[in-house]
Image (tube, rainbow, N blue to C red; front, side, top):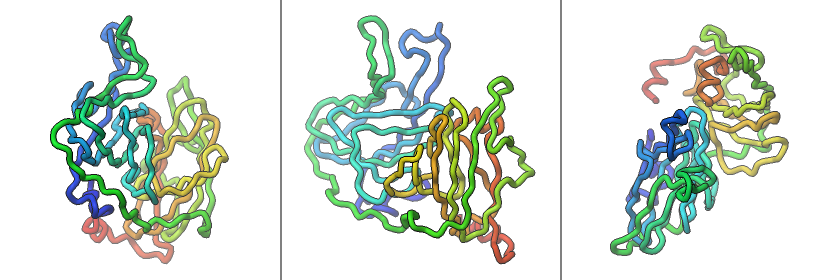
Length: 310
């Protein structure tokens, strides 16, 4: 969290916030009588308690810090109002029954408490327990609603409009990237190359808007992530996606592809950074190229200015 949520949504200046750090741990069978190899935690706990008053609205800020694990979350008898994804505001109100966060995914959501009672925050479809205690919906936390009723729910929010829809943008360059791997050697490639810190794989002039097609030419999960910039998802497996704002992380379906559009327009991004698969084993074993954004008029990067701005 670099800036407060009120920077984007001033109406939330007095709202109570919770940060949820989601992480999984893998266990060997002989240490695993309950969790079936996978422990899921919130802020280091396998069963958290969240206190709310009836009618109270809270801001939940969720980040998935797992290396390669997706978190699905649902709260009994409640919905989530999604405000932003990957730190970028959505373009309008989105109410959902279930949240899905891939590795490195971030979500900011509002939760409005119902009547007094206890409500389970569950991971649907994740086995826990055994014998008569076995269940397919794992409880990760309990929301306990009690005390005096309050009304903190902002009924209407003004959603920022500073992220233009790139559907009709002028595209300066189209690029394709293929994600592949050698399962025997445990090497992972983008366009048949592994990471070399001294090599620049992609050069982009500042001011460009590019369309990238990212193909997963494998049967493994790959999660594409880029530093410094955000992008608009145009299509997934050929299916057009409605414009809901920008993100910086997207799962690329196995043996399929996504199309994204990236505005390289902010002068602060000038310099060298990277894009990579956010399944960390894949990144660590090669699936991470370097990209350089440069001034097309030949100006040098003002690093002191960049550090001050950041």
